Image 1 (tube, rainbow, N blue to C red):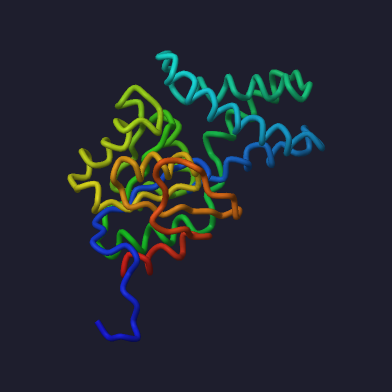
Image 2: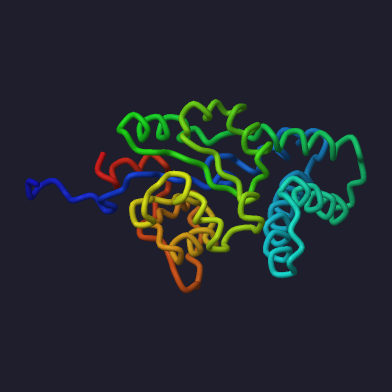
Amino acid sequence: MPADIPAPALPGIRACVFDAYGTLFDVNSAAARMRDALGDKADALSAIWRTKQLEYTWLRSLMGRHADFWQVTGEALDFAMADIGVHDAGLREDLMAHYLALDAYPDAAPVLAQLRGAGLATAILSNGAPAMLQAGADSARLTERLDAILSVEEAGIFKPHPATYRLAVDRLGVLPEAVCFVSSNGWDVAGAAAFGFRVAWLNRMGRTPERLPAGPDVEIRGLDALPGLIGL
């Protein structure tokens, strides 16, 4: 390779696997669409909803009380609405419906298309229930750019349990070190790195790195940086 062309940061990658919520899909878009109804409580509801959604996945895993992500998402929304003092069954129904068709980030579709066009396998690996993920991918027109849409329901436990990351290895038929895993969630990044994936942390918001036993190989601010890192 000529000296003036830098080597890719992540060589030898055969598959790119993406988290869904917060990585490909904007989790704040559901509440944003209901801003007229929620008023100045929209941002608070969205933040609490997301926090509780994640907390409940971890707590259920620790308690051995698994429920699918659709149920967990509803329970987290119930907490968030009660916490901000909003009691409206119709609004709850609308918010849950919007969660099935979240906005995709603008860089998601073109980057997936570029990766797949270069011969790499592409997949989603998410806590989301299968029907949620399929609905979201279809709504965002990402389905045709993916080789697989993988839900942790096949493992029966939420990320970051190692069994969840094993799903991608088994389905795509690649070694962990040949997988570039991309997530915006620091805890997910740590779990994937501990499993053995090469990991790109999609740090869109400039968040502080986690203090966990494993971490990302690279940090990016947008998905458009990914192809260059793997040598495309």
